[in-house]
Amino acid sequence: MTIRHSLILALLATLLACTPKVTQTTTETTTATTTTPTPEPEEELSACRNWNARANQSDIMAAHVLYKDGFKDIRAEGRRQPVSQKRIDSLYQVAFEYWKTAYAEAPAADGKRADHFEDGIRFYEYFISQTTDEAQQQSYVDSIMLLLDKRVECYGEEGYVMSRKAFDYYYKYPSMATDQEKYAMFKEAIDRDGAENAQYFILNPFTALLSNLLIEEKIPLEEAQQYQAKIRTALASGLANCKTDKECEPWKIVEEYVPEVLAQLEGVKGFYDCAFFKEKYYAEFESNPKDCEAIVSVLGKLKWAGCPDSDAQLVTANEAWKAECYKPGEPTCGSILRGGDYRGAIECYEGKAESSEEAETKAKFYLFIAKIYYGELKRFGQSRKYARLALQAKPDLGAAYILIGKLYASSGPLCGPGRGWDSQVVTWPAIDKWTQAKRVDPSVADEANRLIRTYSKFMPDVEDVFQRGLKVGTSYTVPCWIQEKTTIRTAP
Image 1 (cartoon, one colour):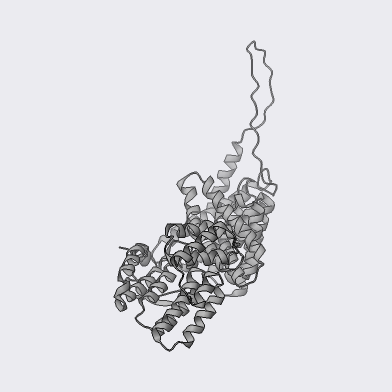
Image 2 (cartoon, rainbow, N blue to C red):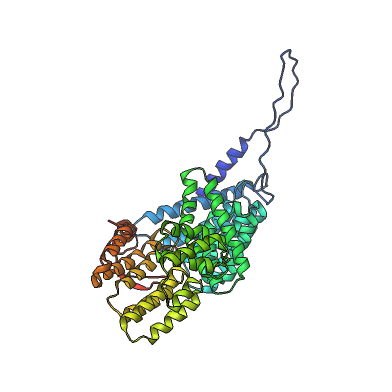
């Protein structure tokens, strides 16, 4: 036994010896009125084995203290320069042995805390980071999941623990479960907790999975509708019930992400109903009742959503089109678009583009298709494809560069959590496109400059660049679906 261990045992023995003992009661006669104190209710302890009143309680508590001290030693070692990885590994191994003793003898510690579960996970996560052996990593992940299962047995909170599992598989161990398996975990988590009490940290990844799997037709439409409603309920409840800035901050981050990702599902026919589209888009027409682009857009969306021809707002928009936009001999593609048949309109415009021998006309039709994919179907990759085809036909088409820049700038929630590095770097290629737009086409300079001013403030700051070992002015390839090389810049 080490000197340090002996000292800890002596200290624990002293503390235990000082515990008040039950003594024999003596009766005294008094004329004073006495009041029997109301006993305080005992704190409920975990049903799992703890160290209280155990014959080897002092040994278990010593192991607990020693592994906790081990974490302190590890932190101290990590602050030294240069850091000795061998020394840190050794400290982890020593502390881990003490943890194993504490956990095996008293999983619930003193019955009031989940430290032995959380700290065990901490050990295994470190071991995962120190090996590239996939089988070994899987073994450590399995151990983590067993600890989480045991945590439920000891402390309940099934919904929270399932949320933890789903979150960890999504972000920490993505290759160890399929997207559908992760999606099923998130479903179970939100069902167990109830939408009003869902954990904020599951909403972003759950929304991303739901959106991707529905678009890939791997989950039923009705199920996706049901769970997007639960996600929206969870977000609204979290925002309504958080009390302090600290409590509300994570919900505000979720608010910047979830609605944007769920908006991508507007391009799935039948996912949102007529009422949804009217509430979201009709005001745009009301504020621009003579703007043909706004009129055609709202007409197409309401028809896409399945609004009946007799719907009052659809009738009003259609009358505005007749009064402001109708021209005898209207091209077939335009009438298809106005009728909400976006796939049909795309086929129509594509046919016209491919049959046109005039470069400017070809470019115009391809740009129409790109705008449909962007504004109506929310398919950014397809939108960029057709914008690039427009530029092949007409390299100085500034509007196509403007559109590609908007696609990139709108991808913050698709490529990251809505804020932070992954969501900010999309501004670099967006600004590149807008800069190129005004260079090749002075007619779009005003719009390009406005967009550049708006989005420049969302670029990463100097500290974010420095922390990643990067340097301003050097090249950087933006990941996600964008996959474009750009130059690192910082917010003004």
